[in-house]
Amino acid sequence: MKRFSKYKILLLLIILLGAFLRFYNLDWGNQNFFHPDERNIAIATSNINFIRGDYNPDFFAYGSFPIYMIYIVSKGDFDTSLLFGRLLSAIFSTISLYLIYFITKNLLFSILLKDGESIKKTNKIETYSILAVALAAFSPGLIQFAHFTTFESFLTFEYLLFTFLALKLLNKPSFLNYVFIAVIMGLSVGTKIVSLFLVAVFLMIHFFVILKGRTDDTNKLKFIIKFPFKFLNNKFFSAVLLSILIFVLTNPFIFLDYQNFRNSLNYESSVARGTLPVFYTQQFLETIPFVYQVLYVFPSLISWPLTIFSLFALFYLIIYCLRYGLRYIFKNESKSKLPIIVFTLIGLGYTAFHLTMFVKWSRYMVPSIPFLIIAFVIVLVNLSYKRHKMIRLISKSTLLVVSIFAIIQGLNFFTIYLKPDPRLEAAKWLKEYSNNSDTFAGEVYDIGMTAFNGAVGNHRITEYDYYNLDDGINDQAELESLNKLMDESEYVIVPAERIYPTRVRLKDEFPNGYRHYEQLFEGELGFVKVAEFTRTTYLEDLFDISFYSGGIFMPLNYDETFRVFDQPTVTIFKKNT
Image (cartoon, rainbow, N blue to C red; front, side):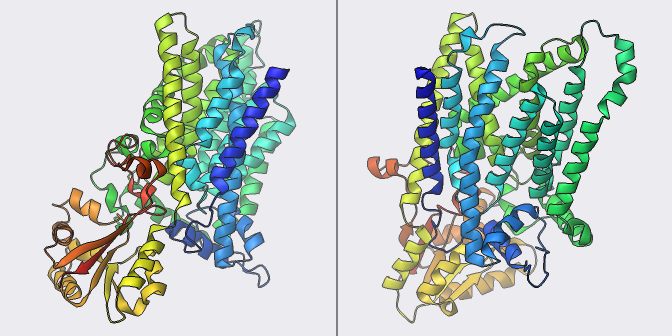
């Protein structure tokens, strides 16, 4: 009992520390909201006015359910919507840690035991379950998105809660458990339409539940004949109807404003597949799905060692589930492995879909993080109980080393929130060192430019559309316009690494853009770099070396969208007179 209490205290301490990492400095931009998705959500919230009878957010990139949640408190106020949305993200991200503990604990019992086997050898299950919570608590991706009013933290919580309820349903297929899982399924789809994959998972769970009614003496032919009637029972229909009802109630304008919903769905899916070129997906040109996420996205979100071993664990579970799933379906064996199968279906259902897309934004992979972490822990623990001594040693060593590395990277990442936003620092510097008569050139479509409006006046800033330099339409006229702007400007502001890295990487695709940025950085346009601002981490300051972009934490580079919203590098050039 004392040992159990110690585990609970340790779990509570880790969750409290994880909460601190999520709630600290939610207003990291000093009420300058630089994330475009956040602003879109706030605008959608401001479209609602219950008093006037305006209930349509007129925004379908996400579902309406979380938008209504935010509106209830913010009443459509822009700043309040964003701050309360971040608060909700932090809350859901923190509660997710507790769900990870229960899910991991359940799965460890499942993967370590054979049917009817004693649980004596699993006395360390508490420790390993808490390890999974610690890896999630210190995950850079989960910490970062707890600071955004985007709905990835909502989805992560919903998918984990669905998993938790699915495991309960397998153990006890009561009518109430069907109701619970139907509610969270409806709300998940109401948060984002991609959550429809949960419907397929629910069908599989219900299929497994019906199969559990078999015994060794069951007549197989009679069971197959009666199976459709057993499958389509009252619990099933009640769950389906309830989930549909919840989805409709939380997203009524998908039906009442169907044409706009359909147009938005077509647009978003075309962008996601890469069939509709838009300026904000150019960084994904000539990148390979799955490979890009493995090399750039997941290492940013969970560390590169954890990326390698968690993906190995996921592949291990796929083979594991095929083996035991077929044995259960055809031989009525390995019932204890059903929780592992259901967990893998949920995690794989979401992750595999997004690993095939043209767009590879880091936010898309955030809901996958807990599933990768849990897979890593349960598979390595399972291997650590194998008979071969070398396998046990390697598994335990890997668990220890990879976990320490990932936790250090997460704590180090958090330290960026101890520092002011680079755009605000750059704007402050520019206000102090520029003259009242100076004019400035900046980049269009980067919300970071708004930080400079109040500092030097937006009437003195010209935001140039660099995306049109190589669109094949009046390129020469665009170049002449850009050269004129360079002649007339005293300063050039590069607010983030959004445009120029793609031009450097794809110089044949964007020859004009590449030439311009190369000449700017090399001083050939008559400008010299006079200031640079970024959010370096504590370890980088302590050792005066880069741990990222070629360093130990990121041997290759960041995904662009992991960096540019809350930790960009702002570069200021001044005309060399």
